[in-house]
Length: 232
Image (cartoon, rainbow, N blue to C red; front, side, top):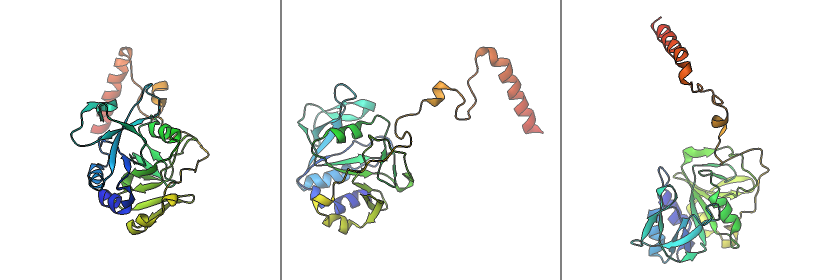
């Protein structure tokens, strides 16, 4: 359904340069949509972490059979192909909110990359409806998607929030009405960066704090108390 909505809702991507992500773990696999766009004249590109690692991503042209190597997290990236600026980026999301902001893996790569590009690509987030959140508490550097595509719908990101539109309506939108990454939120807190509170203060999240070897008698006593409670 995600493939169908991408292809039907964004026919103007044919003939354009499209950045996408090789599927990782449980992310939506958009390679089937990319294949159809390529059959209609599009070029595809995959992101690669630059040097230094915190620099914006670079997008390298990809096609079936091109030489690949293992990149960050073991995700394959093309070797030695042309670096391009994409017209559109199809971006996976671990979560998304009512304002079109996304949760990634905490590295901030896509936000830095989109902010660094002089020509803003059409940012299409892909995710599953079950991962929709009221807010991710975006930070000032976070950049919202222009559209969100799930198995259930296409949403255009507008000032007032996500607006459900049909594939037919999406396909007729003029280019100037597609890209709108001007929104910024006043950040009330952290969003995608990882939380290290559990490392600073064991037991912060309510879990039992780890015990040293000196605490072994206490641990055994607690285990016995639990066993007795279950029996009684």
